[in-house]
Length: 339
Image (cartoon, helix red, strand yellow):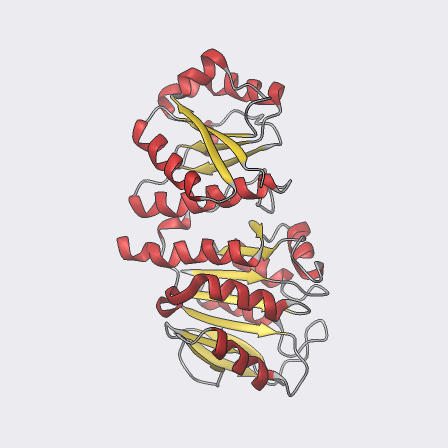
């Protein structure tokens, strides 16, 4: 197995130690060195000996940022830039396209989740992508918010992807609610629910019912003939009056849009393998409401229609395999213990 060779630059010895440890935990990455950022300015990073760099920046060395950006542009080494929280306007206007920028958090909980995001991005670089849907964008800082709800949409290939993702989250599902709209032939909903129960024995999986409340540890699946929506107060409603959307009843768009309208705080929207565009506009609404928005990557999608359309629309922040999405969500859920 070829490991991605990563070098770390940050003035803080404690941050370097944290990043070394988390990168070392990955089966796909190896840290070949960690140094103060000043070493990067003095000696650079040899392109032939390193596959990616992680560079932590601080306002104290803001004057050197353009020099670092120019070095990265010349060397073409993929980089993850850790910028001071809230100082996006301080960044030089021309970071190379092969750079990803993340914001440094201010709490232990925030660092835990940022490290998970960082590892996912680096693992994506090993496979020839950034692991982020838009490498030029910055991930939302909402790493310190609790994750109360995971809303999932999928079509062809979606059931297996959903299963992989939720199994990876594991018993952390006991701390969050999950709602799923899966395009599936009428009559097969019960079989789908039974299958989820078998692979997720630590959760309560059922068909969603009108009027029930979202609650941690429950995985609710949309039944046939009605749009599943979330209303104020985290109440589930089944809309049997609205017509199908993109030919689908239930529709992923209806679920996502209802959450954006009524309960955006503490929500992650996930769009998995499937044909067509259902869920794309709803995912964009969730992103605009400040939610985490994730999609399945092309390599593991049976059909890349829905995730691919979301990426083109600018609705997705992270594009990863289902297991990587599960790890990312698990870190967000478990981070609540530190609040």
